[in-house]
Length: 115
Length: 117
Image 1 (cartoon, rainbow over the protein chains, first blue to last red):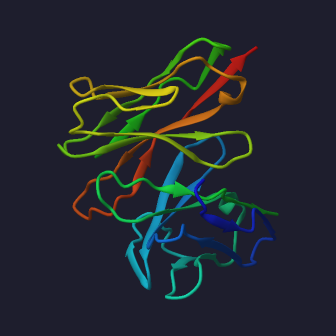
Image 2 (image 1 turned 90 degrees about the horizontal axis):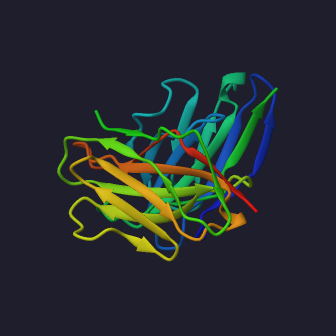
């Protein structure tokens, strides 16, 4: 998986709590993507960020979800007031650029369970 | 709209045999990239192989090869000499080359492969 680090691996939250998911991209990669995987489904794009900028958030729910990628530190996907439907695996991927041959390397994912 | 379709929810293969996992795609863009990822039961997503729309030859990476048929819009993954460790979910993905050109991936539904000893 070429060094994309996500934590925590598993996260349990009660309805109404906040979930914060972290992603450190591979060294030298400045492009970060977040995807969500519901059980028995493929991954769905959520948001694409570069350092300090959100480039494309077309896959993000309009409410309760936010993402950032600060100049220093990991990218954060934040889910406020979680509901049971937010239970899923959240994957972060990084790449060095957006060219056609751009390969996105994924982290191991964070499994969010909402009780 | 761009779309990726994997029509085989599950496949079985005998150890040491070859297996083909199907993937068809739909796009009106002449420039695109196709990817295959493996997701074992542990859950991580592992990049396997990439094929560019303008590549003249089919991509190969070790035991993995991509049977790219552009006119049919198919990009099937061929795994040769299957091993027990190949048992996993396999996803086909396409780079979204919309006007935003962000490089985000569109994934198929996946195919579960089980290798029998």
